[in-house]
Image (cartoon, rainbow, N blue to C red; front, side, top):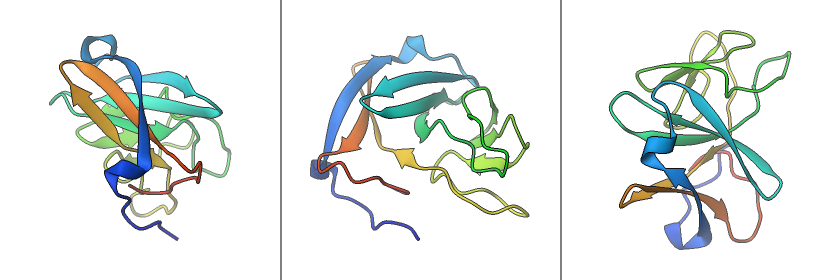
Length: 122
């Protein structure tokens, strides 16, 4: 079940690097508290943050996945995952938790909910 869209004021944003710190089409893992987050930059410059956990039956991480457009190819089971909302694309099913990203003056910040609840969709 998806969470409702949250108000931006419900998040605390944490600096995770500069835009140039992220290589296009490759993931980079950052830790924010207990969260392990995979950050991806697309060839058009958009930056996305997803939980670094494969939704596939074998588990694993997704940071080693390859990006094509706004789709991540899961490195373990080759499932296609939308970077925009974390949804696994047909014919497979599942979802990866996503985190809001803010880019301001080349600084990249990732948002975590202030009350600590997990989110499944921004």
